[in-house]
Image (cartoon, rainbow, N blue to C red; front, side, top):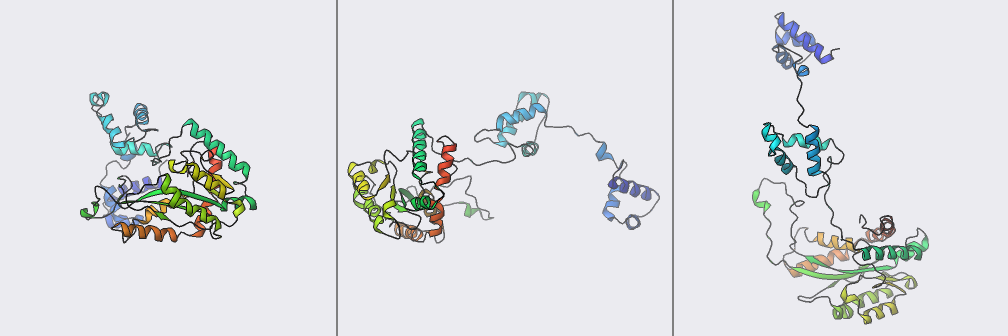
Length: 355
């Protein structure tokens, strides 16, 4: 059974052999003159269908490609092809395989059709996993994850606090940082040997935020600095109705950094906030639970927007402007993602979440 395309080729060959010109054949058959010229000179119009193509991807080659690339961190397609072509059996048989052939095979498989980027997550110890499960069960039983009015009110009155460095010239990721340009000079990004870095601290709730603290040069956040300069911002937030709406349901969250574990700091927090997630309750190595972490990413991304800051004062000004312009709707949406984070941690038996 010939297809319509093969029948057309037969007719072109027949009329051409009868002496018709290419233009007349094209008008008779209502087809393109280039098609007529192409097939009128072919001796065997079915040559493409009669040719048996030899398969390059043998089962053995597929198995070797799978061993080289499937579920392997940093697997390289080029290195895999080079290893195949340099193998003894390929050399003895004078056989080669192209990168395109292997690439087509990968696209035909479920595991090789998409090259997923690696995500860096904290390496959790058994104690971290146990503490995360304990914390998740505690906040779930306390009602912080309930989809009720009380649960939403509890979440909206949690003050999420943390510290983070902001770097003016961060080290580029050579895999993700790309530029599409014909000017090669734009591929070079100047970066000082010791880039400027500032340390900031602050807290957010669903309805507001504290004042952003920026450490002076050569100051580190130790116990004394945290207690005298940063903690007062968090303690004053409970009296600010724009930040904490209900004092009776206020909760302060801070991680277990060494400067946070001083007894005087813990005493001040527990005497001010009815509930607090500090050392003993907050699980270690759990940035995915702290909802202020995405805010630090927003601040770090703002540094790259034009005009790019050029000195410390401009960097501080840019970070403060971004902090003060945080959208309340964004903060509220961020806070109400807390139940999903806790649910994922419980489903993963205390493991990492997607956040």
